[in-house]
Image (tube, rainbow, N blue to C red; front, side, top):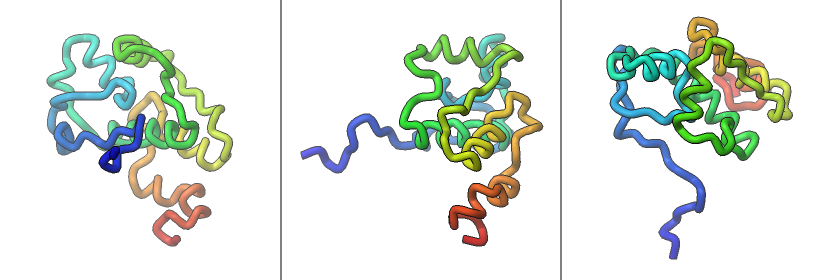
Length: 138
């Protein structure tokens, strides 16, 4: 009976996937970066221009949740999450991630400043991937 479904596990919603340079049609507060939270709160969410740095932030949040088994934002509501992200003083805390290389990787992905986040090539060449056998030389 469960049709292969895992309780509490959600798949990625590809219906709202949009190409770089376009505007978002939907968003998940748990995966949106601070720059989008700022735009959304100021009423400019629909005109926000998507960039790869948005995906890098989302990837970092996904890695965090996969590693720790918990949501980064705990029991906060979507509105509370968006509001907490909008402040320039937002700093990520990845101390629950026990693997030091993975903790560093997640911390890089969750830089509040989008220009400081790594690109895909930098991610693949990060020591976590190079030492785990998952990277380009694995």
